[in-house]
Amino acid sequence: MDSLSSSFLQNYSITPSLLTHSRPFLPLQFNTPIKAKAADSSSSPARTQLHTTEHTKTRQITPTKNHSNLLANLFKSVDGFICDFVDPPLVPAIDPKLVLSGNYAPVDELPPTVCQVEEGSLPPCLDGAYIRNGPNPQFIPRGPYHFFDGDGMLHCIRISRGKATFCSRFVKTYKYNVEREFGSPVVINYFAAFTSLPASVARCAVFFGRVLSGQYDIRRGTGNANTSLAHFGGKLFALCESDLPYAIKITSDGDIITLGRDEPFSVPLKSMTAHPKVDKETGEVFAFRPSVFRPYLTYFRINADGIKQTEVPILSMPEAAMTHDFLLRRLRYIS
Image (cartoon, rainbow, N blue to C red; front, side):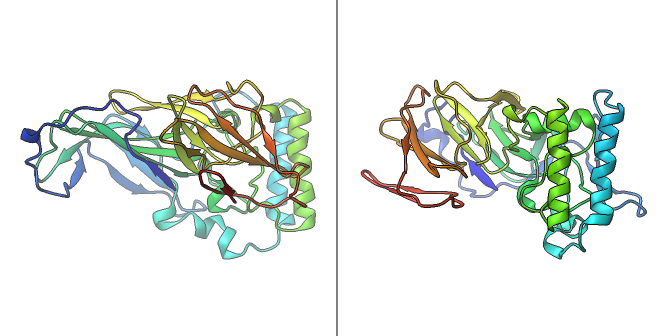
């Protein structure tokens, strides 16, 4: 899970008269009554429902469009058959009944909710936001699941004029929207799905069947934007390394809006590291993208206006490798 401070929000000057608050910690409490209700013990795996006086959400998400055609149901049935009869017994690390339990159980979206300050007060000069990104599956899977496979969810505390507002929203990626329309997972869980050769072949066949039948457009990405946050080119992004960044916005009332998959880099990008480096002096962004084909690693930079510059392929790399992050020096990349 990655976090970002409020450097991307409007800055307010701090005067000495406003620096008299000495408490380093201010306990906050939701002003809206919220209670957790245990789901039916017969359901599998265990789920949690959130209830508020104004807004009720459950993990039982229904399809937003009618996809009850024969082909869609066939793919869903085959996927269920793979989970029930083809997968070998799941090890604890990828068993959703164990992985998605306790503190790691999925949570629902929460609209902007005012928090009550129980001790002290928030200085009026404090204006900004603290936002975190992390995996939170929209649907509890029947088959193998790894923490890294969850849909991106942003949790944000917006502080302004002495008031704190908390909000949680999914990053509305193309993957998220398609799966919400179908009411079930569609994209393969990269980190956990390949439990055996028969299961791997079967899952790939189902997914590419969905692609060939037009149920999923792979050109629009398969990423879940669940890894990190970055601010560059005047925009705030949620990122994962298997896709392009998704631009997001924090509204004045503390809500989180997904603006869409960001592709204005002049030259098309296949993917981008989830950990780009920003040069504080120039505003330039340095990043890379790995590939399973030559060149296996390509570096590039994005200027202060958000325009992608000429790529630099690393031709000396002899084979594909999992490259997740890198260090940036004035004259060198270290990855």
